[in-house]
Amino acid sequence: MINIETLITISTLQQQDKEATREVLITSYEQYKERFTNIEDYSNYIENIRLSLDSPKIDKVLVAKDENNQILGTLQIYSNSEDAYGRPELNIQNPIVRLLGVHPSARGKGIARGLLLESINYTIQKDAHTLHLHTGDFMEDAIRLYERFGFYRDFSKDFYNNDVHVKCYRFDIHQ
Image 1 (cartoon, rainbow, N blue to C red):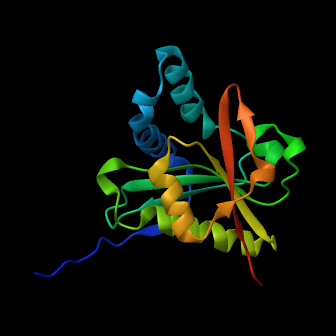
Image 2: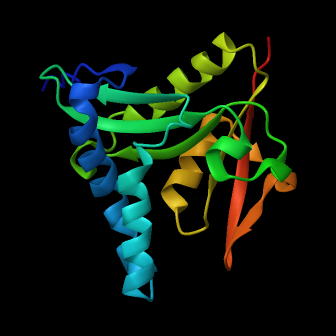
């Protein structure tokens, strides 16, 4: 049997793809619904994700598409912790990945890995030395991916969002 992988291209979000990207992003995060004990908290979580693509503080949005131009995954890159989280006290002045999402039907095809690799390339283009991201314990699969990719914990950049411990992971660029 011959297994032909789907051709994936990663590019910068174009305006005409914004709504399709928003839907992929929301769909990719719906898997966490059961983690919320309060439906209002979950609704706020999804609404924040929905609105995230409209933020003028995003430095770059990457999208992964298949050969049919279907959006399969996305992530957002911010320039610093103030733009990403409204938290200048974290003192991160290098790119930060937020809201990495891959449509459930497209998982396991290397899409998240490709998006992260392109984020690292972007970090290098910006002449930055680190790439950061933040996540929570409930995102076990994502954490495993980050660690396999070479991200490691940076405890000094953790923070709390209400009562949720938001953990920082960092990737060092060796130039």
